[in-house]
Image (cartoon, rainbow, N blue to C red; front, top):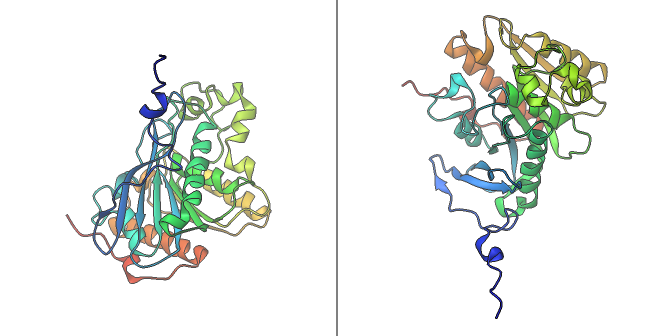
Length: 300
């Protein structure tokens, strides 16, 4: 008698139908689903997201958060250097204001080259949309929000002409033109593209938000330090100019005294940038304004 094929039994359920883990209560009536697989990529680690759900009944508008790290490192649980010590966390604060918050992993440049990262965001958004009834989400009111390399990916995702439901993009100190350091084979951009931009100009253009601006894109909120020594503020100003040229509403905020990741900026001003970004996201998504959204983090 032939041996049974055990592979279907051994394999975990596909993320599209796998049961959700029990949510963890995290205060203020919030619920947290941590480490939920959203996609299976052959030969790669499972791709996961953390999902924070606000109190009350929905459907809730969604913030899709994309972490930074030069596309080479980083984790979905980190929203940037200046917010690592915030208590409550920035994720909890966004959720307490009335948004569902999905913070997603994506393949890093050491695992796969572009456009794998953008495809992973699509996979996360598709998973959230497919299970929106179960999770009480309104993915037709989604704001994508990213910092640094995550801001670059957030901008590209918002500019994709085949994605529906994105009502705004919050982009913090992000690279927006990958052709500026064209010949450097060791730059983060080259590692993302798989070659120096000059050696693969087509891919560099496809990976550049400045080059992918299109009429009909959702509104953008761009925040960038005037003293950014890693990603110059011209990345924000050039993207803002291109968006304005095609009629896309854009709110550009150049922050004096701020280096990359808001380094050097007083804590109250970091708080102001966060609160302004969140207020803007609520305006775009039509969510309620909750006083908790501007509550400062507790001192540690």
